Length: 240
Image (cartoon, rainbow, N blue to C red; front, side, top):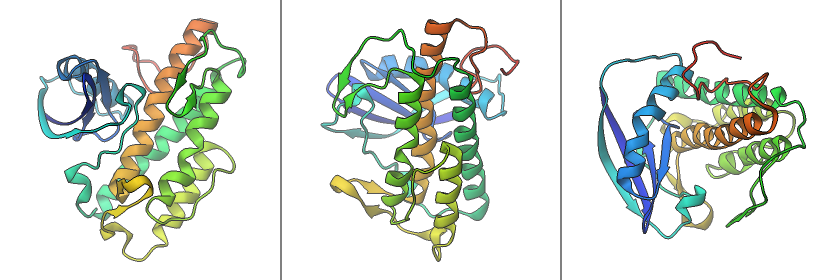
């Protein structure tokens, strides 16, 4: 199976995105380090999406973007070449289903943590401030991009209710826009380009970043018992 990858980098730091399965990604101190991790990430993503594949994977860099953002902290502004293309209704519903599944699974992971304000992680600062450390902080941060992402394509949305509830309302508002499937890419905040495809990919990607951090924190702080592996980060087949 051929897997297209988009490589975004700043100096020695790399973010590698899977263009074939939007939302799958790896980070590394080099392109080679990120590529080395990608097969495991793709297989975990396919387990989560219930599209298992045991065949060989062929990784191919299809786009490269050098920038000045803090890649090591997952700051990103790349628009994939493929994200400039209009969506078919079938593609939209498939990607929307994944974005909603991602929100539902993040909510289930958050709810599985026994103490939402307890953590074993030390404080750390990044370009956007203190890194979320507790389940509550990670959940609030992940939910908070709802109005931001939709707003970048001129769709009015909010962050009220659960992460799933506000995302559902955002998609409903998007679908009320005439010809939203063919809406061209546009310039949003800070000169960054956005499109409907990019919003769909960014939701899954952003959820996945913080779900992985939340899952690892939960295991380290509370042990394996009871922490939901809804994103299928481990090799086990049963889902908590």
